[in-house]
Length: 491
Ligand code: ATP
Image 1: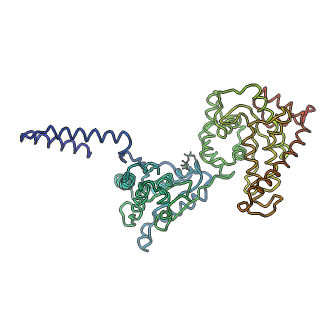
Image 2: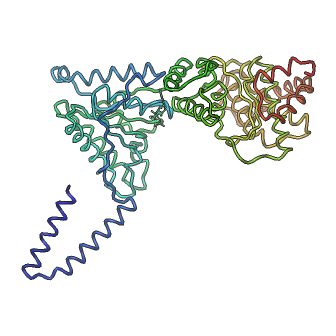
Image 3: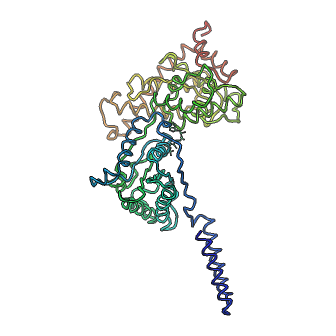
């Protein structure tokens, strides 16, 4: 609109100057130069505008679409009810709630909650990402913040809404502690502008703006953002527990034909540590696998394959050499035998198909979600991790770099044992421990477990060889098949 008016005005002035006999050549030249410069800066992202602010008035997501986050939903709803009660807020002279900060790991549904919040308050939803405000050029970010708020108010007026919800994802990028980025003041100016905008929000405003921001790193935020009157409501959005995962799986499979053998509760148990985004991806991948096979329904096998894909990444085309495959099969069988020993029934799948950065892997069935670990549990974990390297050494006479990440994880667990006062050092502070003492204690823990693993794997050498051969032929075997070998006479 502004563009059209300025073009029209420019043309009128030019015609007028021509009519009165003025030489417009130099003016035209300067105008063209200016236009070219502007075009170049825009195409390089130096000048951006918020013309295309994504505004969604018809937000379809509701709190029913957010699974496994009952307490976050409850807290958020409570804050929103407060905001919606404008008359009472005005009557009692209460300071309006201006910002809600959603914090938690990636993919847990923070954006989803913000959309549902917009729907709940019947607000227009305008979103931006923290990184969109950060430019090399001072003042551009601050200008974008102004435009974002202006766009939000205008969108609400246009759609005759009383509320506008501005959602800023990854706010830590723009709202990091001031003064940290000493190289330029752009970050500080942008953050200052955000604070100014938030301070300007008033209960008497025609359109009430609510800022909802999300971050995975609340500790990185400038304290000014968290002081009362800004983001003074923080809602934690955690990884879902088993019940939560079941709820999310139900949500994401409600439009999918599932075969009878699919047990969502079992799947929820198998997906410890998965976020909502992982679970959504799992349901989607399983459906894609079913489609590729031309199946009418999505089966348990599709879900199992999809779990592997979500955890480890897609299958790789590259094929290791025969010797490498054999080594990987021995390594994974070693893990599986010890896993089964310390927790019978714990092996879920065994495969030597390369995926992501792994050449093979043994997946365990999950236990109930655990938040506390005993000494036995941690030592058993170390034993399972070391079993791959020990099996390689027993059958091939040497170890390989394949055990690198196992050893690293085992060392981390050993550190946990020391920190928890479960090592021979007794109750000690890990931080004040001399590094040599710590390393010696960690080494001792690993050595003890290694000796235990070696003794047990030697007793099971026959089974190790049989299962390894079978795995080499089949590439993938299920937990049940694996356990079948343990009960046969060959084992
Ligand atoms: P990030 O921190 O990476 O921005 P986020 O916490 O904002 O992630 P979302 O973008 O809300 O996560 O989630 C991505 C997708 O994952 C959603 O569109 C949804 O399909 C699914 N999802 C995540 N959490 C949930 C949940 N609690 N219930 C249902 N679906 C979920």
